Image (tube, rainbow, N blue to C red):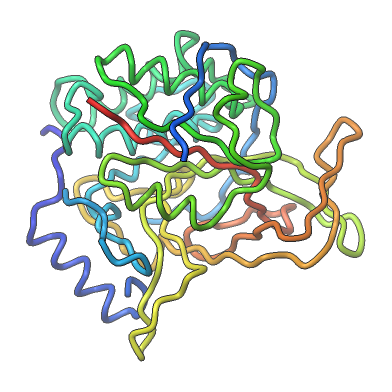
Length: 316
């Protein structure tokens, strides 16, 4: 069975569930070459895996993509990924968005086939040395993402209207034109996911506490941003709530996700220091910490920070 967009009745059921739970309530720079960054991620192991339309015009809440975007599990044995997919979070996260876009105006982003196999083939293609050059034990760096995404989109006959990067993590010299800021902006992320032709991927850093206000990075992880905002019992939106599809948690297969399990909350840190490795540090003031059921944290990890993000808008 081909991976199809979720039927209208299922989307309706998703929003009904959201109400009950009280949960759902530029620049056109592109990179110019495919040079892989040396910086890669090693995601922390998750110990508790969980079980169509354009984005909302309401700037406070955007949830429509959540129902229509796959949530593939990177450890799914059907994938046959190297190292059992432990470090395939990046190609999996990006494949989720490409499947959505393939079903919403850009069909060449996904190959033909039955069931989940087209997405599995896409994941392996993205992870290959032709695109991301994903290392099966250390993951994928943001430079490889920028160059690989552009190359893949263009090879399928489309173009990147926007391919932008915000974050402290270094990318290759040839990706410098994609850099907008050293810190991901929440408004920028929301604008990207609201765009009906857009996709957003978050690069999360795993950190341990090494002192008062001091954190050391021990790994990283990529997730798909699929929405934001929530309705509390009074109907107000939560501006610091995001909906993600986390490759480290079991996804929806052919069913809508339970939106309560996709939630993460953002909290800006007032002060502190991040030890990012190789005698490099970053001022943590103003950076976002993430927590919530959508991002289970394994033992040995004390905090998750939003290190970087990529926004893509595809054009025909």
